[in-house]
Structure formats: C-alpha cells, structure tokens
Amino acid sequence: MKFIAEINVMPLKALLDPQGKAVTMTLNNNGYNDIQNVRIGKYITLEIEADSKEKAMERVNEACAKMLHNPIMEGYDYQLYEEK
Amino acid sequence: MKFIAEINVMPLKALLDPQGKAVTMTLNNNGYNDIQNVRIGKYITLEIEADSKEKAMERVNEACAKMLHNPIMEGYDYQLYEEK
Image 1 (spheres, rainbow over the protein chains, first blue to last red):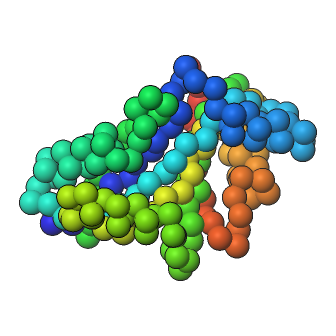
Image 2 (image 1 turned 180 degrees about the vertical axis):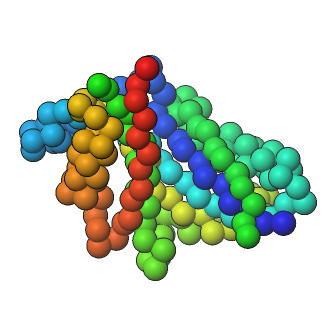
C-alpha cells in the first residue's frame, strides 16, 4: 500500500525565528500591520510504501526523528493518508 | 478578533525540486528505500487581527499572493482558525 505523509517541521516555540521576524517586519512595512508573529518552518511531503498504516506511521516517525528534523531547534508533526 | 493562519507553500508539481530530490536520495541511501518523491516547501504560521473570518482570509490570501510565495515557482494553500 502506498501512503502520503505531510510533515510540518517548525522552529521550537522557545527559540527566536529570525526568518519569521524578518518576514513579519517586511509585511508590517508594506501595509500588513494586522499580521504579527510570523514563524517559518518546512513543509515536507513524501510517498511511502508499507503493509499497513501503522507500519507507515512508524517509518515516517523514525525518518522525521532521525533525518528530517533537528531536535535541538525544531519540532515536527505529520499526517498520513493512503494514496488512492 | 485574532486568527491564526497556517500556510503551506510548495514548489509547483511541474517543476523539479532539487532539495526534495537530495533528501529522497539521502533517505534511500540510509535504509529508507520505502520512501520516494520527497518534496520540500515552506510552512508558515502567522497571527492576524481582523473583524471577521472572511476579512482575515482575504488579507491572508492577499499577503500570500503578493509577498509570501513566488507564483512562477510555487503554489500555496492555507487554513485559518480563530485563536481562543
């Protein structure tokens, strides 16, 4: 079975996000004063082949933990659904 | 009213995504042969102050269209919900 995973990787809340700060300022300086607290992370999609949804989730979780995020600076969450 | 927007910005399907290709290869070379077709975009969250959900959506859409994505190379979608 083939599954699609959608993963969000975000800088941890406790850390400064300089890229987000810069975008907030740029928006504010260009007429978007109603927008605050922009934070920028990564959105990752991937296809995974597995026997069951549980196995696929386990593998995606492992890949996120080991390869796709930096636990010192980032957190992640993901959604998984079967490809039709 | 304060709303939170969650925005996904992705490279267009028709375009190569070299960063995603590199991550796919790295995963495959490290025991994740079951993962294919990784694509990497941006995940942006922001807070917006507006009188109604419709107004907030309009503003976020405008900010995405004008400032947060590059229409030549990227597409975007977003979700909006009220902050409690």
